[in-house]
Amino acid sequence: PSLLALAAVLAYLLGSVPFGIVMARLFGLGDLRKIGSGNIGATNVLRTGNKLAALLTLVLDAAKGGIAVLVARWLLAEDAAQLAGLCAFIGHIFPVWLKFRGGKGVATFLGTLLALHPLTGLAACGTWLVVAIATRLSSLAALITAATSTFWMFTLGYGIGFFLGIALTVLIYLRHVENIQRLKAGTESRIGEKKKTGP
Ligand code: G3P
Image 1 (cartoon, rainbow, N blue to C red):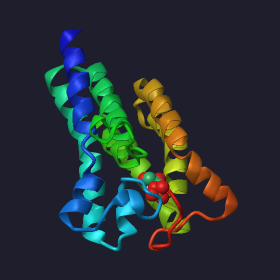
Image 2: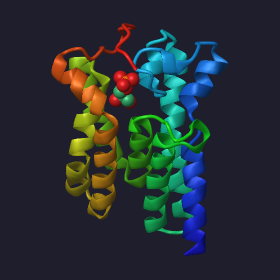
Image 3: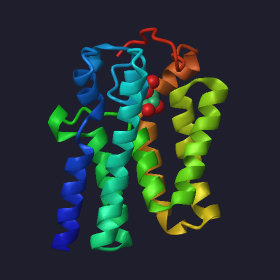
């Protein structure tokens, strides 16, 4: 149990590293909190126009979840891997370094799923890509991906991830309340647009 608790804390601290903010500083893009949606994720980094910084944010925020899962599974077991993925995800959305005001968890969610069960992860990434390409709405892609993730878990053979999948989906929806309002109002900004949508 103490090893599990240690894994949970380390995964949380890893998930807490806000790579969007780190990249924005490294590339001199200004304060992400004052750009676009004000979010610290790759979608908002892209609104600065810097595609490399956005790609690095996406990959590194995803890697946080993936690495937490793989290390916990390697050192401990599958339940520890699930717990580590959940804690890395919670770290991203409630990071200790940013006074618990973090991101929306989509990249970390995808990285966690890829490491937990690659087939499910690939199906989720595919779902995100299809919706994002069809609509150019990153938030809508995330919401549909989250909602369908437990379906993919069951159909592709990771039924033991059901409760984790539900928990992550609920948290993603809670973090996208403003996006859902903008989607309903038809004011959500599309991928590639740099229009300010308010914090
Ligand atoms: O990954 C977060 C995305 O779903 C929405 O981001 O910046 O448009 O609120 P944003």
